[in-house]
Length: 163
Image 1: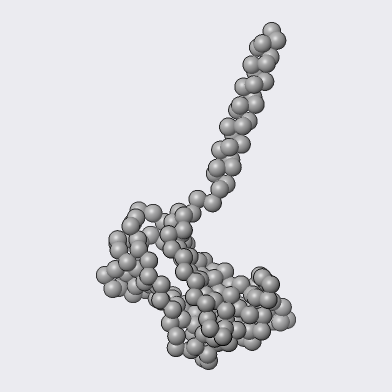
Image 2: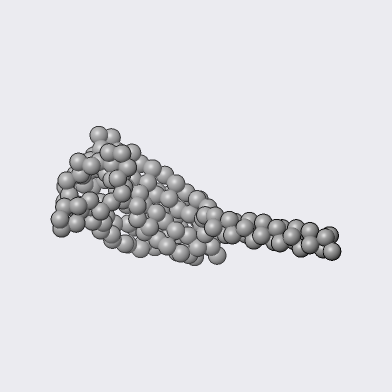
């Protein structure tokens, strides 16, 4: 009788451990970064007509991908918004255009972005669950659509991850 009780207790323990390991594994970030590039601006200046270009390879057309743009702004950034556009150029040369606007401050002049040290972080998922239908080299062009040169822009990063 005692052996049966120990066996049941051991079985429950093993079952709980297996269940916990499955839960931990499923909670783990399954996205695999296939491309990451950060552009750091000299003197924190992003000139009006300066377009950033990012080239990356797609080798799996059945997978879904996310694209994340991170813009690091100095806290002295003077505008209430950040307006930018993206061109996605496929291996065959076709073009898709997307426009974005991120609010920096609300109507009461409160900051709406996370603060990291002396910087504000724009962390924008520009594509989510996108499927690329062609193998080969893709290009993302990113430019700001503000009317002036932008001071106090520290860096811009593009991260492409495969789900």
